[in-house]
Length: 285
Image 1 (cartoon, rainbow, N blue to C red):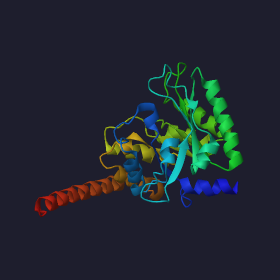
Image 2 (tube, rainbow, N blue to C red):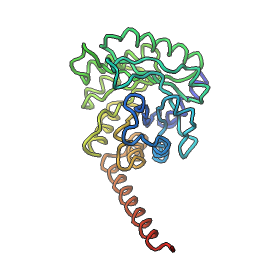
Image 3 (cartoon, rainbow, N blue to C red):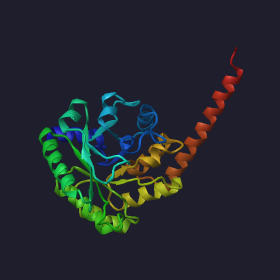
Image 4 (cartoon, rainbow, N blue to C red):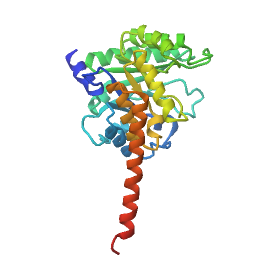
């Protein structure tokens, strides 16, 4: 287990035991969406903000987009589907643990949707990846969501609680699930799972406060961090949003302090833009 712990320390803060992950695997399912059109820039912004790790597919990993700092951890996502599939909730493996290792991955991840008609195949894939990853000492993050024809409410706390426990029982080292809406209901999720739980960011939110209040609630409930995508890489200041979330996850700072940090970042960006514009106007022909 020593090798696995070394790699875990690359994707989680060894002092706090928590992590801020930025998933950037959306290009396969949805194409080059806003915020990920220039993937190298997106990775650099996450690194600049102090993220512990990003989640990417093997093609991005192969191109060596390490961002602005070598300390950024890389998690290679092994499964996917596209928005054009007759059943986009059915995920299929597109990379192996061994291939991810050859590319330099610090960890791997697998997506499973329970309550789906193809749940059996996805659970089998998760179990296989867990066995292989364990043999190589590679941490496994399992993204598990209640999504499918048998699911009425994918944010039902009891369903999320089951999803998290399922990941733990089948060998995941970290489980990623949706936030249930309140600290009390999410505490049931973390208390029923004996591995670190991180929250997904979900759809793009309306305000910075909404995002940070969600982070606050999850951390109060015992979450070990976040795995937020669109609400970071589609933000007007991705690095600033990562920095604000890191303040809360690792520094246990308040929502107001994190918002103040974001405001300061926004003001700095405006001043820098104004300075560049002024310099351009006064540049010699």
